[in-house]
Amino acid sequence: MDYVALQVAVQDYTENTFSAVDFATMTQLAEQKIYNSVQLPIMRKTAMLPLTISSNVLNAPADFLNAFSLAVVDGTGAYTYLVNKDFNFIYEAYPTPTVTGVPKYYAIQGPQTASEVLTAFILGPTPAAANNASLTYSYYPESIVTASTTWVGDNFDSVLFNAIMVEAIRFMKGEQDMVAMYADQYKQSLTLFKNLVDGKLRQDVYRSGQLRTQVI
Image 1 (cartoon, rainbow, N blue to C red):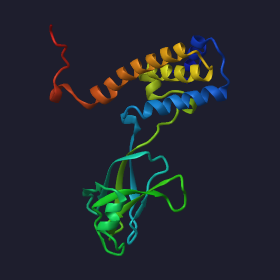
Image 2 (tube, helix red, strand yellow):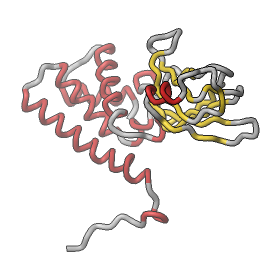
Image 3 (spheres, helix red, strand yellow):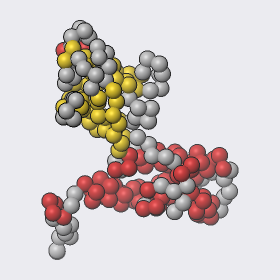
């Protein structure tokens, strides 16, 4: 279901017309709720980031949400994966930033120096060579509002539709029983969606065997 069809469906079901701005807001709120309830493969991205000699700070990409892994890639292409720690651990283990080596640990330090809305990592020990860091991380895919079509809209439109319906009934100041009904429909579709994304997409028949229903 593309964005236009989605808007028509929601307005038909609610028997209400929403402005373009209001419907876009409801849709983006619904998407954010879905993307924070499951871990879709399309939400995963890898970026090569340059390490700076004698600097223990590494800036994350602008669309960074959370890290899956961080590795140092040396000149031969070999990967050395870092262990995620609290920033206090790194400051205690490596109190002197001038002590350099191949980084072993990383932590979320906080905002970048140049921007308070962007994230930075702190590394321990401080890099001794100008290698690259391979960061695999989660990000928000482009909204269906601007992309017109998305993976969720094309492959599991029921969860997106029901999530928007929750936002729509809230926007319309609906009765509590109607709010509860729409919320229940969303929970049901989200359960099926999680079964696909966090279940079936994380296994195969060769290693896990076929799904079986117990015979009673």
